[in-house]
Each structure stands twice: as structure tokens, then as C-alpha cells.
Length: 366
Image 1 (cartoon, one colour):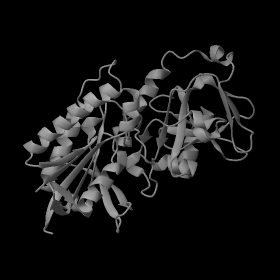
Image 2 (cartoon, rainbow, N blue to C red):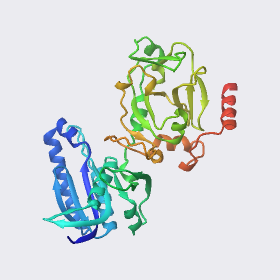
Image 3 (tube, helix red, strand yellow):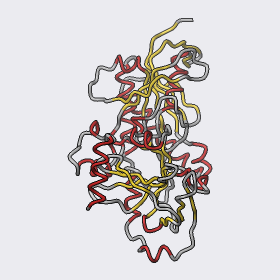
């Protein structure tokens, strides 16, 4: 059969089955709107829609640039939609773009190039776009920045595929961390909170530092940043935020150590376990981030988003529909690091021991 080299775009709705279960009619209406919009943009960029299959769409282009421009324009328009509070959760598409040889048969296209585009789509965050390295090499536009996600092994694909995620900062009009910051406002005073019975408890590895929590969480998440990874010794840090007033240490109190210019960790002086994280700049945060794993019921505090994904370890693949954001997109981190004169994300690093010790000593003496 005759083969042809094409740029292939594959788009699919993230969490479609879950959304359909919540509101079937609304989800189907949104799907139709999204598929119609993407079809129009494909045509405007000289592409050809090959087929639709349920909540997915496959398209073919003669140019990698046109395929990527199509995906970016579509995701930006989808992100600009107004959310109707009564309409339920908005659907989001994942998109993958690849270049490969295709076989034409019965009005469809086949081949590894198509399969890889579909697999790459699985890697993209909801509302995001991932491409293969061959696409990146062919792009004529210099307007896009990419994050290297490393080599990925995909089912039924013989060789690892080098995947990149395109940065779409315009899509992040609301950062998940802002919800945590806003919920801190108006929390009860310490005396009011301490009179309440604990809703959960936790402790360090040796049990010397124990905590009781008297209020509901402000938010949960994963952090993949290098500072948190090194602080925890784990490939990713799962955390739960609670108002400081709601966290009571019932035995030993944690010892604190400066992790960076903007934050400190609280740990058990006996066993070394991390028990709390707290931001310090531009002013001390009103909440603790508690490691989810030290709580007695971590299963009740599932993370709701991923932060620091620019540092995610390539072999750690968490397949979920949660929002993903980079440290550089966080209003909280921009404000915190900017207050200490570090506006460039490349300067957002942990402290060397002597500098951290000096800051700890200065804090203890003040």
C-alpha cells in the first residue's frame, strides 16, 4: 500500500466517562461544541479531519506548524470560555501531534505515526498539548516554548518516543494555589479552633511529633519541584494544606530549618521526619502544608492538582485528569520569590547549608 508522510493531530476529552456520569446531557452538548470548533480550526489551517470517534478526533496536515498552530488556537479558545456555575464542570481536551508515515484505506489513515499521536495525547495535561521530537524539529514558528518530558515507552510502540509539552501560559488564568490562599481568609482564631474535636491526626515516623487537625483542609496537591523532592527524599511530594490555627502539636514540637529564601520545613528532631512546610515570604503563610502520608487517613485527602511539573521525573507517570502547572505560573511563588529579589525561576533553588544555618540562627536570635 502507498504511504505518505503527514503531521497527525489526535485530540480526546480528558475524563469523558466521569463527566458523562455527572451530567450526560451537558457533557454531550459541550462535546459537540468542542468538536465543531476544532473541525473549523482544522479546516482554517489547511488540515483534513479524518474521523471522529466518540469524544476523539483525528486530523491530518501537510505541515507540522499548521498542526501545532491548530492545537494551540483551539486550546486557547476553549480556555477562554465563560464558566456557567450551573452548567457543571467544563470539558477539556488533550492533544497530541506527531509526524509519521500513514497508510490510506477506506477513508481512514493507519500506521505507527497515528498510534504515537494518540499515545502522546495521553501524556498531555487536560487543556494541554504534547508533541514528539520530530514535530519540534520541524516547527518553523519560534513563538512556542517547550518542556522536555523525556523518553516515553508506549504500548505496542517498539522504540521510546521523545515527548515535549508546549507551554500555554495563556491557559492558566487561575492557578490552583490561589484557591488555598483565598480559603485562608476568615479562619477562626486559634482558641476557637482548639476547642473543636480533631477531624484527623498524624505523626512522624517515631511518634514523637504528633498533630491533631481541627478544621477541614484548604486544599491538596502534588509538588514535583526539585526543592520538595529533595526535602522529602521522594519523587513527588503529596501535601494537604490546613490553617495554622487548626494544627495542634500534642507531644514534641517540630524543629524548623530553612529550605530556601522563602520557606522552611518543620521536622522531628529525633527521627528526622518532615511534618510541616510553611512559606515565609513576603510574610509568613497562614497555613501549613502537611505531608499527606503522615496522616492517619491519607486516603481521604487525594491530591487535586500537580505543581512543579517542569521538574517531574520522566519515569514517574501519574495518569490522571488533574490540572497541571509549572512553578513559574504560580502567583504565590512569583510573589514570594520576587520579594527576595529572585524574579527569575532559575534562581528558585534550595539553600546551601551555611546560608540556611545563618538564616536559622538569625531567626532564632530575633
